[in-house]
Structures are given as structure tokens and as C-alpha cells.
Amino acid sequence: AQTVTQSQPEMSVQEAETVTLSCTYDTSESDYYLFWYKQPPSRQMILVIRQEAYKQQNATENRFSVNFQKAAKSFSLKISDSQLGDAAMYFCAYRATSGTYKYIFGTGTRLKVLA
Amino acid sequence: KAGVTQTPRYLIKTRGQQVTLSCSPISGHRSVSWYQQTPGQGLQFLFEYFSETQRNKGNFPGRFSGRQFSNSRSEMNVSTLELGDSALYLCASSLSPTPGQPQHFGDGTRLSIL
Image (cartoon, rainbow over all chains, first blue to last red; front, side):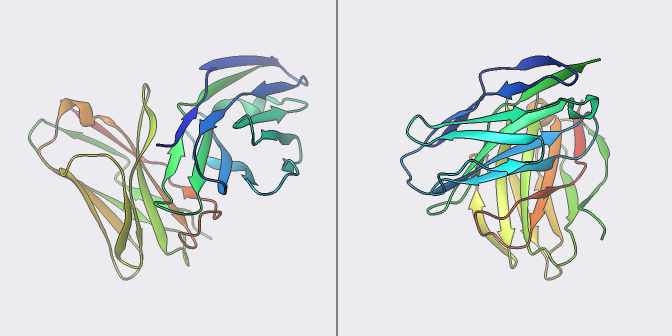
């Protein structure tokens, strides 16, 4: 069965600094998607970044980038130039491209941004 | 364009009762998924609907059920409520169930069981 693990329940970063959130997953599939979602306090969850497993190039969206290591089954999120608005719960998610297609989410990492 | 709308926002029920939650997806989105979010478990997938058909189901008891209507609106029902059903229930919609499609989430319905 596929699993997604976020081993950091909480992290802090100073404003304008860089922080990396970790995510590991387990699957026997060769093709799948990985996602990072952000859930600000009392606000809707939104997609931050998406990576397809067969694409070797790491996805980037402005200040957000990923380090995708397929062999190690690792998918970390790097936030550069952290802003107060980045404070949120961050969820790593996996979805296979075959079989049941179910989304599997990690338990989340709460990011605090210090002014 | 209006986002995903979930109603009601808050619900308080007692054990043994049943509850129905509603989700209106973004216009044009035909796939709707439901999740249960709790502090300890994170997001647990409940089920996914597309074209009024359930495509996927998570590992929840049969007390949890859902349906989707022809206008893509979806409802989920929980019968014989238990204390452990207290959670934030999130609905997410996407254009289609294609795996790479991003999901757009609603604000959720917070269900409290007394």
C-alpha cells in the first residue's frame, strides 16, 4: 500500500530565510503525481506545486521549488525568501496514474514564519 | 468564478444521529472528492465521484456514503454518528478525475459529535 510520511510536525523559519519541508513516500508504481498543498489558518487548502514522476526536472513555482529524488522516494519542498503569508500547514500528497487513483496525504507540517 | 462551496460550515450532532453534508463544485468541474481531516490523522480520503458514479472509496465503514447529482453537486451522509466522527470534512473538485488534475478545496464542514 502506498504511504506518505511527513516527519516534521512543525517547523519555524525567519522571514526572508529559506526552509525545506520533507516528504517521503512508498509506492511500487513507476508513474504517479506528487503534490504540495498549503492550508493557511482558517482558510482553504490550495495547491502549491505539482510534480509528475516521469519528469526528471524539479518543478518550480516562483519562490517554491521541489527536490524530487525518485530512487530515494523523497519529495521535499523548498520555500525561498519566506514571507509571513507562508505560515500554514503544508501537506504532501501522492496520486498514482493507474489502479485506484486515490489521493494519499501526509499528516502535514505546520510552518511558522518569524518576523 | 465561485469556488467550492460546502454547507453547512458547522454542525453539532449527538451520537446515533445521522448527518448530510453538501458540496457544490466549481462550475465546470465534474469530479468531486471528500476527505476527513483530524489533527492526528491528517487528511483521510473518503470517496471520489465523477459523472454521478463513485470511482474510488477509502477505508471507511459503510456508515459513510455519498452521491453525486447530474449537476455535479455532491452530498455525503454519515449515519449512526460516533464520537470519533468529529472532524473537518473537506470537499475538493477538479475538472476530471485525471490523476494530474489539481484539486480545489472548499472551506469544509466542521462536524462536532456530543
